[in-house]
Image 1 (spheres, rainbow, N blue to C red):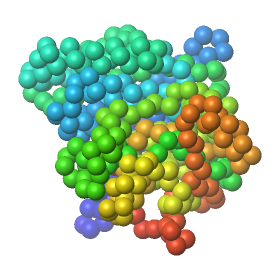
Image 2: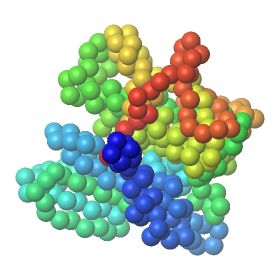
Image 3: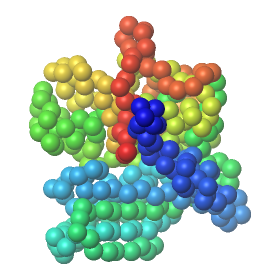
Amino acid sequence: MAAAKAAKAKFGEFERIARYFAPLAGPGALGLLDDAALIEGPPGEQYVLTTDTIVENVHFLSDDPPDQVARKLLRVNLSDLAAKGAAPVGYLLNTSLPKSRGEAWLEAFAQGLAADQAEFGIALLGGDSVASSGPLCLTVTAIGRVRAGKAVLRRGAQQGDWIYCSGTLGDAALGLRYLRGELTGSDAAAGNYLAGRYRLPQPRLSLGQKLAEIAHAMLDISDGLVADLGHICEVSKVGATIEELLAPLSPAFRQALTADPSLLSLALTGGDDYELLFTAAPEAGPKLKTLAAELGVSVTRIGTIEAGQGVRVLGPSGAALDLAQGGYRHF
């Protein structure tokens, strides 16, 4: 009985996908082991398809401004396109709206979509809208394109690769705490910065497209660095070692860390970063440094791909850390 309960407890999001949906997958679905699908496009190109759903009080707060909810919805999908090295083409939108969300909310929501359509060069292609008793549930399916054979998948990591991430880590997780009134030790400017990182992630589209020629494996960090690196390791059949002290942190995160050193774990396990996590050959280091300077986006080496399996995190003393959970779990 105990063994049965343990097995049931481990039956999470990815186990459900493998059991119920992977047998249904077509040729372009990549075995449902990635965060996008590839289908053939015009000669020399492939289309990249990805979809994400955000749910009220799971991925955004009920009182978040509707224009920012719209922009986050679009951006988390654009981030998936960035992780494939793809350029955006268009998107489909599905909304499940409680009747409490009236015309004013929808108008502001649409204005947010319009602002990001203009910023990222993408347009609405269609979708569906239904009424519900709540909570508010929103889905975008984004379409991008990439040169044939150049999409960067999760499965390409190689032993000896260096592991990199863009931007800074853990800001969004702290931003959620700030919005909930659970963060101490941060002044208003730092708190507002962190809240902005939670509400408005920055899809690294330009960087992702450049990395299509450099990276061996790549994804965006949505559930937490350790958990998402674990997905790369699993499908690439490799292991990884990262160093806690190498995790890139923003000044706002460091301010909070001064008041509560235990927050450092959020840089490793906090979700909603939507930064690019990728592996590349060691000799790509100088090229990555130049690329980061050209685009104005930091790129930091945080570890190494090795033989074995799973992710090992080294603490400040060099000893392996025992993390209770590598990141966010839906089930």
